[in-house]
Length: 89
Image 1 (spheres, helix red, strand yellow):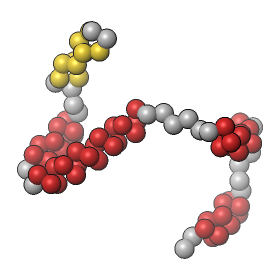
Image 2 (tube, rainbow, N blue to C red):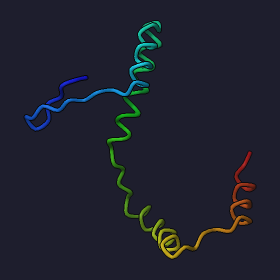
Image 3 (cartoon, helix red, strand yellow):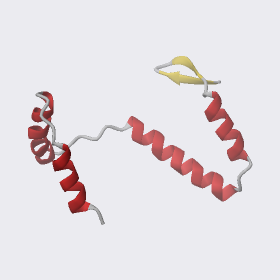
Image 4 (cartoon, rainbow, N blue to C red):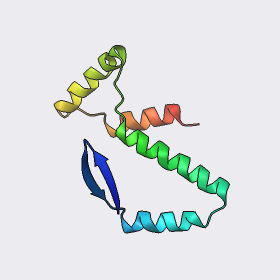
């Protein structure tokens, strides 16, 4: 458990048992592997907290698809298969 201060108020945070187990295993790794793992964890936690805002042109390009999804219009299985066939190596 860790005591974290937010807005001047203390909050108690605890790790899940699985995360605790992973940390314990990480302690046994060589220093370079620990650093690599730490970078990955930091990237993952940063990604979860950041919000990507679409530029106006990307949002405009996405709006027709969102409108179709709102009314339940989706690509058929054949259409999806055709896209996969076109873009698979």
